[in-house]
Image 1 (cartoon, one colour):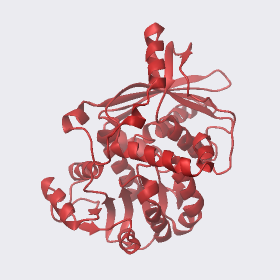
Image 2 (tube, rainbow, N blue to C red; image 1 turned 90 degrees about the horizontal axis):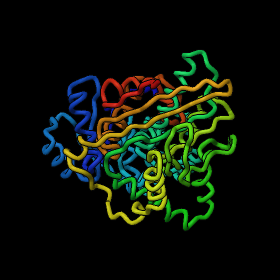
Image 3 (spheres, rainbow, N blue to C red; image 1 turned 90 degrees about the vertical axis):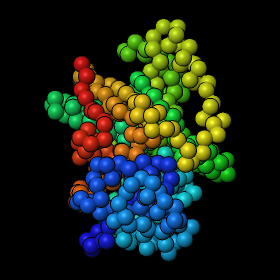
Length: 391
């Protein structure tokens, strides 16, 4: 994208629950008169103006009216900005034309997508167009999958700094997580299950850890679907609900990074539940839990500020290579994962694209492949995340 644009960044969905949090973060972290010129977008100008006034955002932050059902308004929106940040999901229902427009216009794009079947479709449909136009499309810039995708990248970098070969085996283990599931995540889950019911071919995409790796297939991967006791960790582990999307993104990152982790790379992701009988009981309870399918939480709903501020998460990554080398690291966040931390992560991902237009060429990327290490630095400096070596 070489031509000048009126805006650096547009937040589409700014009047929604997560969109408001993104705007609040941008205002607090970057102001309204700084180096980044940003705007709020959504279907209703009146609602946008109401939200802007309620949040005390200066009226110099412009309002952009656009509706995903109106291609002309979408085209106008994406043509006016260098980066489009969208929180409007489920993306398989409201995002396809926006990705298409951004890819065609050379406009960078970030979202919170955890819908691998839709991402698979978008890569096939618009990957080449994005490469040609220079648009950098980056999916999954929230709790799924930034802490996990960047956690593996960080761990691999530690090994490289130690003069070691790539870590061909990495375990991602959630040690702690306090916070609520996003209503948007639940809506995406329901939409994905409905789509799979209508199209059995999508089931193969959902169950394939290499579904986003554009034809590459590596070694057999652990399923992570049953409780197990891990001697090396001294703990029981249970299935982790985000693993099916995170693992696909991490294998795509490996592909986009020219297999920096190795073509024999094996990764799995689970939830640590502790040792002994108590740990086993918790692991089995987690494995049999179906509350996600039964939850009535809807998009636009979410926890209070107090609840968001009390939230946190802690993910451990353990990697090894054939020489016997092993390294452990952690990624921690200081807010609830679904809202408080996610809103900061996607904002910083967008800011990375604004501030470094030459960081990568056009295409459909992952957070680890682009913007990668630069995003790790910004998240640690600004967004309450820490990436640390352990042991």
